[in-house]
Length: 457
Image (cartoon, rainbow, N blue to C red; front, side):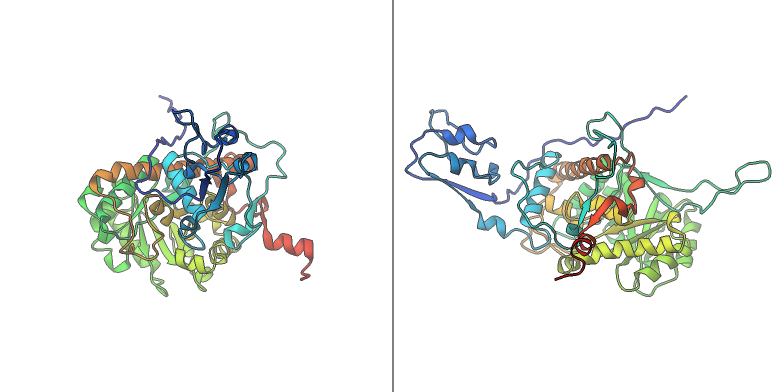
């Protein structure tokens, strides 16, 4: 019987936040208002509405986009729109208030955020903010990836591929088929930081990964019996000296991850030990981005690593946003230069704060990205760095909140996938695999600055 093709779909539903963030703008109506209601007629966002009594109601600050049309149209000059100082105190210089607001919207609705007032921010920044997508060379973009007239694949393969296929004299294939794990989106949910309700949070992350068809990373020490029904959606992470403790999970899992310490190059020994336990297991090796990344990525590839995961802490990326972008391209370029890029899967994580960072990471050379802090912000985190949430963080997922948290994560990833589809459609690409390392499909601020100004001050 011929197999039936099923189009990948993310089932998004409304999931209001438990904690409301402050409105970006404060809209005030003064006593000299004559109730002409010109503001209600001109505001397309619903900030100004007429109440049941026929009079203009108090402004709804949460809906204001800062277009100031109501201020200009009011004949009595009775309206003011101001930035809310409480909103400006959200997050930090990297996970900015605007990014947090966007994450909340995406997690609540699953929709792509659209602003009707244009962009009035800086033209360029550092890191991902110095990269733009270039759609100018595309004669016929692939249209409507979201709406479905032309399907665009966002699936990626995790695992090792042979450098070439071998055939015998009769044309029969001698090479073994590669052992791969295919995920329908190039996004993996990274392990959540520890909080007061860690067990429920981990269950929510794993269940969200299962619904999305992707993987959730869970540290070995945090495993519990509630997670076992979802073991096929779990990427268990442990240190080399915990391999014996993880033996049962290695037998059950499709993929696991070894967190290597700096200077540890016993890759082959670790691989052999785990392959004896489960010959079909895929092994990912995780390492921090540092000055030795180029050397380490090639050693990992040459010694048989199936997946290579390089990461940077979000705190380090906040201090230097260029760290993550240069690091991704550096390790990718090393693999290309050694002619082994097609053999391994490269995953990157750290500094992924908005939807555009996913395709930008892939353009720089990654196959997939790990999402961590962003989905925790969607659940109420106050942008906590490290392995543990701060004592005043409002992220608490009780057992009765698990389904709500699952939907928030699914909505966020669903929105990010739709935005990835928009980028792929604009580039004329029908699959995300073709976007990897396509530097020519992007514009870089430093290159443009040098080209236009020629190094002049």
